Image (cartoon, rainbow, N blue to C red; front, side, top):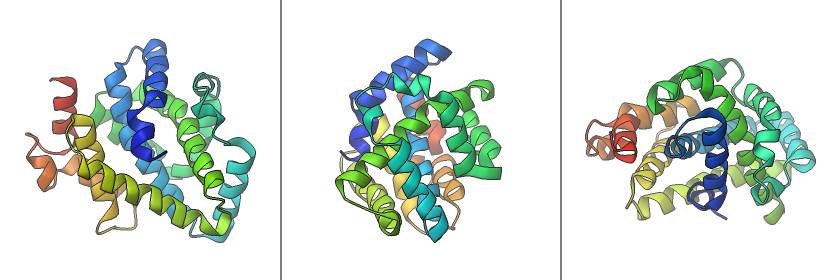
Length: 218
């Protein structure tokens, strides 16, 4: 399953419905948040996996806790929210608050709810990575390439089929994250999406705000 399939298929729909019922945030906003959060998390993990100790730790975590079963039973997302918070703290470290602030400002999801919602989404994203790892029979040494491949394939797929606001978001997120990297995934992804760029500017307003406006009909 490609990252695009995860973000546009039944899994994300079901998780978004759960989060909508729990937090009172529209399902569309949840899916848009997932569309930015998933490549952001994968990019951070790809950077971390360049360190052999981090790669080994990630490999062990995926083997132990993220076999992909959550993709078949998304009710786990709510039950594993606390675990998701720990995942995000490890992935983002000292940048966690900054990430949440940026995402809150540009999705319209209030700052008091953005963290809990991301914590619900994190185990789903990790489960997706874990399943891809299993299916490709990848060990610690191959995680960086696996994660880079997920992003690259999703970028190509999203940009090839930009026919909806969600695909526009995905195309701009993934396109920006893959080119001229600054070495910081937060700057690469949020900067490219939130800051504009040629393809986003044509959406009217530029950046994620313009794209989300189209998605939410603002």
